[in-house]
Amino acid sequence: MEKIKMTTPLVEMDGDEMTRILWQMIKDELILPFVDLKTEYYDLGLPEREKTKDKVTLDAANANKKYGVAVKCATITPNAQRVEEYNLTEMWKSPNGTIRAVLDGTVFRAPILLDSIKPAVRSWTKPITIARHAYGDVYKAAELKAPEGVKAELVYTDKEGKETRETIYDFECPGILQGQYNKETSIRAFAHSCFKYAIDTKQDLWFSTKDTISKKYDHTFKDIFAEIYENDYKAKFEELGLEYFYTLIDDAVARVIRSKGGYIWALKNYDGDVMSDMVSTAFGSLAMMTSVLVSPDGNYEYEAAHGTVTRHYYKYLKGEETSTNPMATIYAWTGALRKRGELDGLSDLVDFAKKLEEACIATLNSGVMTKDLVNLAEGIETKAVNSKDFILEIKKNLLSLY
Ligand code: NAP
Ligand code: MG
Image (cartoon, rainbow, N blue to C red; front, side):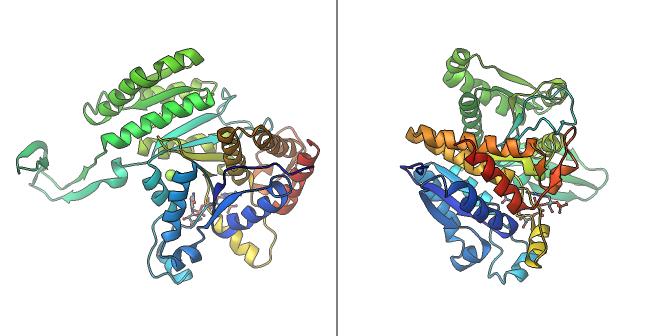
């Protein structure tokens, strides 16, 4: 067949360890034979970040802003042990954090469903997409340990030096304290990303906070969402038959468990962190979770929800066979190629993304899978294969669709 043409380059962000190995296999076997691939390549692998003093990450994020669509491999976020292992001059920041700071977005995570893997919650027949606000709250909080007998206050000071105070607690015994914040600009960006993504994927949007208890903090999130919905999205939602539904977080949790799925659940930073692990585990596996960062001005960064799978990489380095699941990384590629195709009006590129996903599902439905899934699958005969054989089986199924 003739290779599918592209017009605008995709921003390609390579990464680390086992996922870097999978990245190359996916490109060689599943993309390059079919697509005349145009990418602007950035190596976000830790050695290159060290070599460029992390400039490569910032360049990649800016390229994402310029071209609109990126695909990212999992990357190491250095800690003390990695500083030693890679001989780093600095503990470079999380690339995801750097990219998020440039794009100012929301992370959407959705599971890939299989007939043979039943969710732990029996009523779930459609995916639940988690939309996590990835800025502020407890992740940027100031904390103190309060000794006995102190009075704790919340204080802000304006430009003229005038103070506004609120008593938190008079401590008759030792205690603990925390000060959180968020920014209206970030909450607005979060809301716009959620409404746009709901329209994009034609799904209802749920949003939940604890506004009855947190009458200023959480209530501000609720009010901003309500205002933006009324002003900017209500008409489009009604036209598409979609619903925007706000409820308290405890009510939302109960409703999610009783639901069939098939909607986006928007959550504040901490709630999203916790609920996305709950939802992905209940659907099966982190290796079957897709993830995309969407910015309010319409930039997209597709990635896998899992890390670089270090444990498997060390086995790989010793020459041992590994059975790492490449599904989430393949779906990062299909997500990015589909979006690029949609933006550039390239229907055969969109069609290729769809076919590649179909080939993945067909492979799994035939029982050929990586080790992590073998124990989860029910009602079919399974065969555990290594990553390479799994990818080659997908390629065979993809070829049969052309
Ligand atoms: P991880 O890479 O997600 O792996 C944790 C464990 O989950 C693995 O050891 C493996 O379990 C299982 N697993 C994850 N993905 C899998 C896959 N595709 N196929 C099969 N099994 C899979 O998390 P980590 O080991 O905590 O972190 C490793 C590195 O990744 C760290 O340096 C961290 O900074 C980085 N990280 C990057 C990102 C990102 O770039 N988005 C996200 C998270 C972490 P078994 O060992 O039991 O098989
Ligand atoms: Mg977490």
